[in-house]
View (cartoon, rainbow, N blue to C red):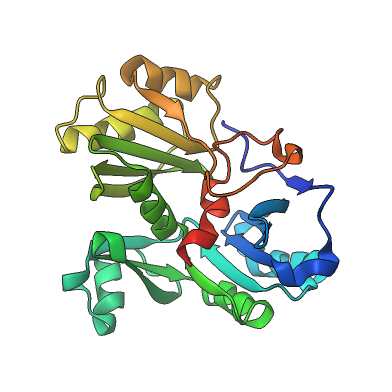
Length: 281
């Protein structure tokens, strides 16, 4: 279906110098289907490097990731700081006043399948906790290769960043990756809806978006919708959504950073979660 974040990428600017690794922050995204990372020069706030590896099989994810890290010379450098975001693992969101660490696994199991170690992110701006699980094999890789890294779910990162993009209006954000759509809706800076759905067709995608709007009694012909991830405005899925959602647009890169011309072939709405990771860890 859509392409983009599922394809390999390798971007290196003319100013990139791995010999100056101590000036760079390393951001990593880990999922069942991909491993990607980028390097931000923390002196100039410029992205100088980005790389994405698709993973062939979810049954051997840990082995593939280990081989990638062992064979990637850039990842062996000593960076000033590191962070890791876990992508598309089972999760549930609840108000912080209801969160209890000792009950996290039970709360997660009530809503979805627990697949590994249970973790929780505190989303301070929304007074909420995101509970999620990550396979032990993935966590072992992080602890072995990136022991100093801070980590979060990408879902938490997106919620935090969307809240800062908002206005006084109701706005919706879609994040498409690995044939899964995350739908997040705000009323001003207050989160009022967050859920994710697997889809296999453009009709499925439209259904889940309109269904989410219906639950909140939102009118698709008036609400503003911003889309990130694996989609283009020329895709059939985007055209179909546009027939029902007239105020729909592709998102932009985070304005806090500089992206040199080498990033121009990469559309602005791609890898928003990866490029904003450093702001939330």
